[in-house]
Image (cartoon, rainbow, N blue to C red):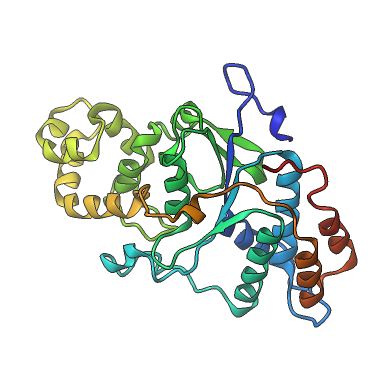
Length: 310
């Protein structure tokens, strides 16, 4: 599905605006989806590189944007969130060396294709993307499968789950989760997130969380007035009030973990995401160093033909 083929539920085409890529999602997906037998000339696995390169080439072919950035996660253990909750993402295994060796190559490729890249030892890719969104008046298309990023969507922004050929605007997020994008941190504070090891409130699931947030708008409103929760006509209201009272501290912690930071102090250079010219020499050198096969190498040589830059 090309970018211009996607339409809003009410009619009309999506405007891509600036294109912000959650790169690590697609690198990890490629690593786990493609066989390790996809290797370079020296026998080392190149499955993540191949999959990510294919994704990136397809994405750039489907779009023609002059402002593009890709955000990368540097570490699973050094986020500022780990400073106040040591178990944040503790359920995830660190990437094996077979993957970490390829991540650097994926970033080099992204830069050689003229795309600005961002990463931080303190902030996650979500935070970097959220900051770029909030710092610009331009509509944004966020390429990711991560529901957390829905919380930064403004009226003309779109979350594009590229692999599933699905796009969500603000109304689409509300339809999918039963809560508005602005309520996603409160929603995750209640239900938790097993992917990121965010605890949530014991005994409260997705449907119940959506019903609570349809009545009380925010987590704080319901935590500050659990008596009203208990007196409501919600199913099991008294039990819900007890769960919220018992899990109040955990809920507030979970909301803090789930909230994307949108005011990182980025330098002018980091904020400059204008697409640059493709560096063919850098691509050739990277392919030679990694031992990339001739088919992918040929596709990468042709990358950028017809691309529009400022």
